[in-house]
Figure (cartoon, rainbow, N blue to C red):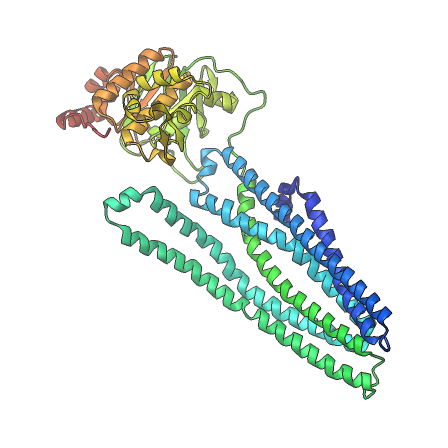
Length: 584
């Protein structure tokens, strides 16, 4: 019930349609239950009285029309309510995900979040629609039909009263067997979606290594697992219809025989007319058909409950990084201070990724960071914009602990160009304006010149109006990196961080980019993570990280004299010709 209450918060704006659908379903059932009584009266009317026939015929037409209209409009309102409910759910999930910190995002895989926002929400939408239409209809139909049956013939109505619990018990048994199987399916959807996403993201690597057949087999296995579980569940549910049909025809046969004996006087079980017998059979069909639908409703609701749990997990996950009370709304400058900082991704049971890190940068200074893979370089810079919170110590920007700033204010002033370059579908201008939504074409062009991107952009037929595919797949790695750097330059932040963001350009272009950034953003504090020592040559300070600890700190000249790791990396790269990467 807790999950249901949480989900119903997303019903906002759709309550009116929901209530109208329920009311119309109730009227539809009432009309359908009155019709057999009218038919019985028409059959039992003595002689050929055209007035009676026309009267009852008119009543039946009115009831049928009313039932039809109620059915049409209840379907319309329930569809609107269910679609609106699903829309709100997706919006609420998406908005909550946007507020997640990196540690929250780490709890969910991207394929799992996609499954939850698509398949799981679809299941909830279908269940909601069914609850409004069928789950409301079924109990009303059973109650009204059973009451009417007892009014017509109490002695025969007991057949329904006996058949209902027996059939209900068998349906519950079927559902209890099928539901766990269906629930397993949704967990396997994550694996299926993960296989698809991984393959599409890495399609170039797949083709480069000629692994198409392997990927096909991997996807086929995931699809087969889903298919097998669905088939297993459907085989169990398939017993539903034959069981209901058996009880329906058996009850109708018994009532027909016993009713005939009552009508001709062989059985003294009260009075019964031919029309009454016809009505009883109709009500019996209504009751048992309703039970059949109820079985399917319960299966659908059971399936949706697993989806509901997964959706509520996303909705209930709250960011562990929130704005403080009386948050500071302005960053004084780009000075950075790490004061004995230690950090681990999980608060308990895990070694520190960073340990006892202390460093101090004045506003406008530049810092190069180098170290082996996994030494904590990206983690270190993630703490500056408060993508994670430190476990011990403090990180200060502009002389204040980052935990005192408004998050939007802080992150507007700390711009990071990530290792993985992310561009969005749209024109180059559209992507540049992520850095500054009001940037003019001249400002965009200037930023691209600094990032050494203007030349190749102008070589395109449409120039800055060139359309980029999702992820910038129609650009080379070096081109994407330079556009991402230009986008960051447009923002003119107080702190600019380049996380190995020039790895796909040659050393000459790298040097020109660094020179352009230094000249165009003189008061911006610059942090550059790089694997090439040539990228760090002109940095004011260089930090050498090793296993999350500071191994060396100083100028390049100082580190070449005193730090074995930096000296070893420098010598190895110079020996290999600078470790240049000529991907442009």
